[in-house]
Length: 395
Image (cartoon, rainbow, N blue to C red; front, side, top):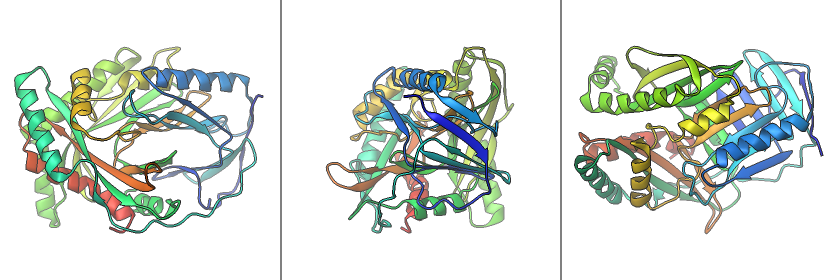
């Protein structure tokens, strides 16, 4: 049966315990309930989701009184990092959507919102996960050795932490803490994946697309002069420039096949977050006709920033060295609409809720390994990146 979709302007009102969230300074998007969920697995999972969503959109009865980005038929997106993941990639069409952007608010209604079930605020501490600190160092040493003896130039390795849970978790307090501390990041809760990502994979509106590449990291200094020196040092670090160059070149090369008028920053800039400095480069262009946002994402994912270079060899080494399934971690997360608009970040600085074999939260943090990498320094970088999720749960 065709979905009946209505978008209309409405006064902004708090959304208690939303099921899906996508937030960034100036924009709040909340989903309640599920009107329809489509899922896919395997190599063609992204194109399958795109085709299914377009078919649903073609059949839907859409009354859009708003006609702004995010109105009309809307789907929250979570795509797994790996095509071999045991987890599903999905597009979730909420029963009710509330969007608040730059003082303008509107609602999209599709079906009734089910009664919300009680949840418990998570408490506890994060413990070593499947990849211990020593295991991560050993994996990093192996990766450096492979890079030095093969065509592999970079691989992104992650480690994990786990927090046991005693009941179905209410993530709203954690999401609010993340959004408050990292307002310029994309704070997300889609399916069971959550976090505050500093990295935009791809945004589209009226055919115009933009992306932000992050690769290269340093911890913030407490003294302003020291902090500025760290930022300058990051910009001139051979290791970090090397890592960043791979990520930018990979994205531009891929986007050039589906975009016109591509432009990039001449030099990377230092992006300041509360805990970290990142090297960042913005990329802009226009999608070619008949190319959807998910079409472009299928070509881009996984980028060199979260997998490595060359991509296939890097993914094979990740599968060999990481003792866990990344699921949605480092995969595209965000939203799409029937008119082709959308915004997809890379699911970083967070984790996921797991229910089997035990109820727990698994957090992830990773870093790019190149020939110049030092294993102890890479481990320290993962600890810096875990600060976000630890802060979210008061650890």
